[in-house]
Image (cartoon, rainbow, N blue to C red; front, side):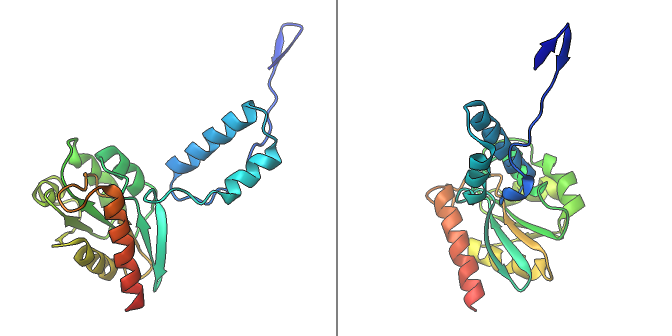
Amino acid sequence: MVGVGGATAVRSERLVPLDAIHLLGPHLVADVMAAATVGAIAGGAPAALTAAVESFQGLEHAMELVADIGGVRFVNDSKATNVEAALRSIESFDSGLVPIIGGRFKGGDLRLLREPLAARARAVVTIGEARPLLAAALAGAVELHEATSLENAIEQAFALAKPAGVVLLAPACSSFDMFRDYADRGRTFKEGVLKLRER
């Protein structure tokens, strides 16, 4: 801002074009824009900021695009270990969504997922210890399917997402009932998707 005779002028510059961001989810786009703003304040040139953003493909297990199989996209957001994080993941898609949700419940209000799922999801596949809690919280809002393993969940979700849907691992729970940690769960999801693609 520059003051001239009591008036304030505001100068704006485009930092990074939105099409340089190759991430899924508006919450991640907002994070990148915040980082670009800090970079600009620190003296980074717009061209350098754009190059850095264009080269960034995201973090493993955070809205990570794993594969497209027959028009169905598979997205790994195993890091979404609480209700709020899962909500942001779900809200990143418009329709045709089949999320895989569940694990060891950490707390929070699973009913917050009802409205976003009702608006976007074809069905939900539940896994792990939280299956009964998810059934109680989501009953009547969306079609529910229980899976006995993550591999079984992937197969069910793929069938439900056809054609042109999205299978999203957004557990809203910790992984400790079935896996060492969220990264182990995310890697198992990716391995299962790749096996599905090979078949």
